[in-house]
Length: 637
Image (cartoon, rainbow, N blue to C red; front, top):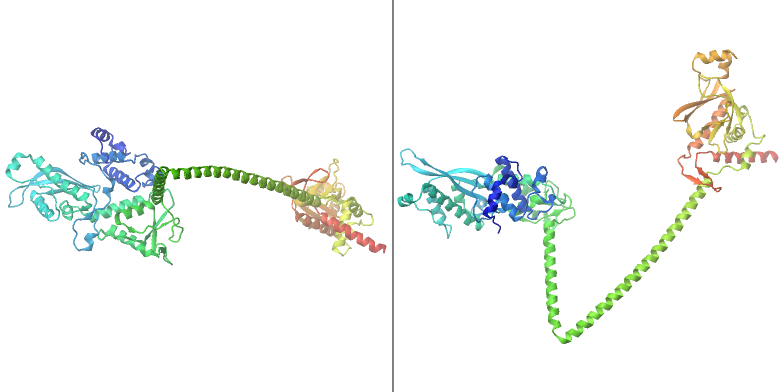
């Protein structure tokens, strides 16, 4: 039992707002709301140490978590609340947060089932406000005792005569075996005792009856009617406020409690209508042989609540059983909250400690016997030897594990080397340059045909083979890289792996190139569209406008990427057959190169040179070489 001393009570009253973590001058509604939250936090989490364990809402959690939740801390908060609410500070009384819950049962209820379901709160205080003289028409004046009633964080005023006190006392005498004595009413008593003292004794009489009934866990319907307290309405309002706070509370773990939907509907009906409480929780209707029934639907047969709401309902209505789940489904995996887990662990620990104590007592009794001492010494030596053998076994296991680990590391290292060598061999074979025999065979004079002659070859494969041989040797063509410039003769040829088209430059020894992988579009234009009359005028000075238009009648235009921009390369041909052959060969090279990937990693070839994998047409060169060799063998035979 924790009761604050007078010094601490004075200290608390001097800083009442600070004890409740409220700003100075807070309204009465704020004080009541804060103390309600403190009581719920105290009842549902009596030993809360983490901020996530509190039942307060998220918007005020940062303020409440700093409040001391120990016994003395709650007593200080209760004294601060009573002081701010103008309630009398009772000496030697321990305030309890459980008094807020409607747990008191009616005293000697009738057969009516509705009265058996009634519950009341033990948080009831009665104090005298004043006395007043009143008179009814045609009767003598009388004295009204104005009582200030504070029930379950609600306050109202009641006016009662002494005759009404006497009637209440007569009703309680028939139900209570022991009852406090009602102050007398006679002229001697009235003269001896001042009016204020008589009023104080009457309120003390009521408070003693309320305390006596609360200690037994019951309440009197007559007392509640005398004080004009609507127990059912106050209970419904208080439960609605509490569940609203708890439903918005932060939870430290995701544990869902399953509650039958019909019971929740009955509870909501009770909160709205203030008529009939729902009774005990009926979760057993959801289970069959301790397992959930089949085909249960959420929101129709059951609902999920958090742990604080479930504990609040269970404290008031009891019943059950508790159905805990890790997911908001009754068919989800079961879960265990911290409170239940702590209870189970305490039971196991107590059993373990009891067994240890019994073993020690038994050992102590055996040591007193000389014969048992020899057995105990033998067992001690045996345990020491067994401990040494365990150390040896652990050493052997560690050495065996180390040996296996080293062997596995060596095997993995050798396998990685094998994979790297295989990958290097594959990259080397893929990026190998055609040998000199292949290049020389394709550059034979007999195999080189003019582009106009290639137009007469009907076989596409043979035509492509001759085209590659001709382009490897070099073909003079006129080219344009801008439609505003004058065509110029250049020597065009393929590189050794047919990855790009190269041509010479008249201004320097630098060789220009167009990679086939950068080509976006390849078209034929007949005639070639030139921009502006300035080009025709410039060329008419040397050869005439008619020659320029006639020379640019056939052209192959390649659009490619260069330096982050788009360029055009126009190859001007002399005849339509030459244009078709050039378009045919370049299209085949572009199609073959586009099937390769240019995003390859660098590698080291057989000569130790770092190379990069680039798109190429080696396959076409090899096939052309084989086809030309077959044709040459046929001609020789």
